[in-house]
Length: 105
Image (cartoon, rainbow, N blue to C red; front, side, top):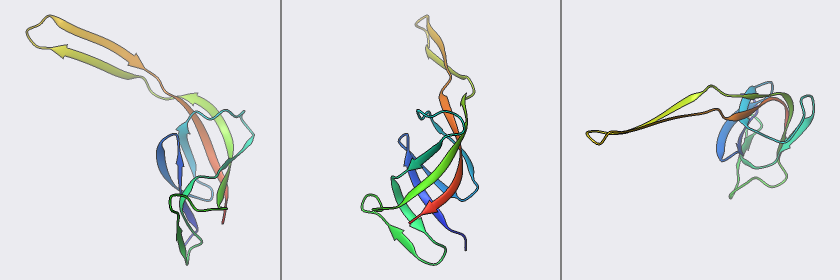
């Protein structure tokens, strides 16, 4: 089995393996820079599994920033029936695309 880790960033959890490309909430880093994600909830080398309480000490995931982007536009619509009330809004989240380089225990 391949090494993997469960990373928490931006209030969300991601299962990552070496070579994975994932979109996370915006991180302050330029494209091409390396980023260390050090809040690992679980990490496995393929044979053994370490589970943190709450995080695994000393473990980190090294990823490179592919690009900064914005997600798709989300439509928010509120309506109260029979009350002549309707509101429409939109939102686009800022995202960072990461490519996982290595998982270090």
